[in-house]
Length: 566
Image 1 (tube, rainbow, N blue to C red):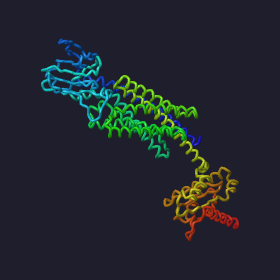
Image 2 (image 1 turned 90 degrees about the vertical axis):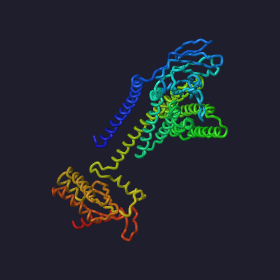
Image 3 (image 1 turned 180 degrees about the vertical axis):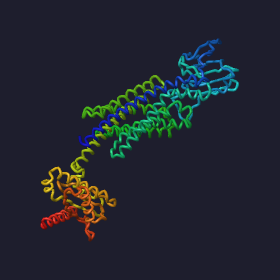
Image 4 (image 1 turned 120 degrees about the vertical axis):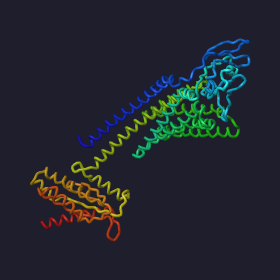
């Protein structure tokens, strides 16, 4: 097996190992998610010993009588549509602690006697019930806690009853940690999105540095960064504790509107050119939607939440349109990457439809978790396939380069062959290799037949290899010039010296001395030389043809002089 064949085998084995490594990393990622979740829950009892659920001691006053109940529970509203729950189990030791309550969508108020400790106040960005459902009411208890019962007041919004969860009580850090735990899935999704985005960007720039441009890596990276931004700003944790909540919500809405644009670019870079106008139309529609909603909000003060249905309709319609487009493209050419893209969009469509049903029909606040999981799965499918395809393309390119190098190499001597010589000359002619001047030296072994007759064919081949080795040694010994060496025939060699400062006789002497050292006077290798310059003494420049003809003419003259002497 040749050296290059062994290299190809090694590259293929390396590729298998890389795939195995990626599979292992994915398994480790999911195991870590499971372990983090398990350890988070197991450690909560010890780490948050100062937090407790206030589930007992609650009562309603109905017909001037106290009716006890434990939370969580479905609680009936009174004739005014209000629910008032009382609790007198708090003690003076609970002062300056935080009482955290779910259900901001039901406009809760917290009272202690005649003192109102909390009521929900909307900021400059109007939220709907689904958004409020992800938030908590964190209430700092007063100094006189324990003297009077705590009263929770809810607006039932014409509903006969509400499902009320049990509040939690504890220190501010403990309550904040609990809220973070409840949002851990979203944060893991965010980290996964941003991590995938970073890896995708690194792969893109690495491949670009190696002259392989795959724009879809950059599309996927931008998509994941925007999705991660939306998930973070849309989370209840940010809305509770983040600064500039209204600004964050505006950015969240615009991230949600525009996050599909990079994936439409991805589709454009996957499908055939004649149908790329379809995703381009949807890109313009998304831009128009973003501009329209901004103008309506600025001029007419229409809240973004009241226009959210436009974005939902557009995004869902866009996904369905891409599914239909990809299906038609797959039926036309049955390409694997089209099929994978189709499956990814189908996954996104299912998760998106489920999230929309949860949002609009059931008003469930954790709709975003379903959509986040769908986004992450969608991108993972595309990214994994793209990585595999790129790996195969890179391997194919490397094999092509190996075979190309093999085709340019003389197997006997290891020098570049005649094909490489002609290519090099052509690049000089076309100006791809820019030179002020160059020297072309033709070298030919004479008397090889005598060596074959006296010493055998093996020695004759050895003399050719030794000559090639000596030419290369002489070229390597001169650090002042860039010198390229070629074997252009059975006994013929060519040497190109860039911008020569060395005389041809000097180079000839170096080569002959190396030959004498190599043969150790066991037999005599006769070399004849002919040279030519790309630039004449008067400053005029020869054509490449004249340059080669000049060197060949001198070589033939030298050989003729030798034969005349004989």
